[in-house]
Every structure is written in C-alpha cells, then in structure tokens.
Image (cartoon, rainbow, N blue to C red; front, side):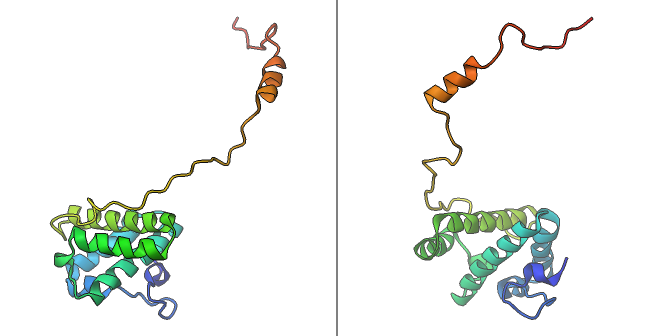
Length: 158
C-alpha cells in the first residue's frame, strides 16, 4: 500500500500519517486500522475517500480529548450533526458509512467492544427525479407497433 492512501494530513508524499487516536491505542489497534484500508477496501478511490472521512472524524474526536474507548453514539451523532451544517447530504452519508465500516471492522477484530456509529442516523437524502429519460405514451406505442409479431425470429430447434 502506498503511503498516499492514508496520507490524511497532507504530509510529504509517501509518508504514512495515522490518526493520533489510533496510534495511542497501541499496536493491535494500529494493525487492525491499517488492515481495514488494505484488506477490506479494494477500490483505490473508495479507500482514499474513506481514509479522509475517517481521518477527519478521528482528528475531530482527538481534539475533544476522546479515545477509542470513550467514543459513544452521542459523540458520533454530534460530529454528524456538525458535518451536516458544513457539507452536502451525500458527503455526510459517505462519511458516516466510512465511520460505521471502520468500527464494524474494529469490532470484528476485537479492537473495540461495540460499534458506536451503528445507531447514528445520517441526513435524509433521496433523488426524486431520475436522470433516465422516459418514453412518452406516443413513443412507447410507436416502439411496440414496430415489433413484427408475425415472425418473431426465434431460433428453431431441430
């Protein structure tokens, strides 16, 4: 894995920068954190965006004196609430997904007892109008009428 993948704090290229809250928790947690990005997320772009999202969240927690043990659902909810005021709903949902996935990974690896983000709800966001064009009634009728039903062209079996 290149250092660029987790270069959350824009350090020199190739320099791996891990969130302090992770490093402080010890080698087991650090290893599990790195495994999340190397073994669990295959897509490079997803890995990078999740690393930024998780890094931002963990730095935010660190600034408030939190440790992995003291991160509770209320703290995650406060972060999501703040992020909702600053970013688009799609971005907030992506950040919450990254945080949830990381904590799920940490729980299954026994680096954390429970996932504090699992009960936190993100902002509502739905697209009411799709981008796929819809045929008008006249266009649909023309398409259906153009089908030759007398000779469907099915291959015949011998």
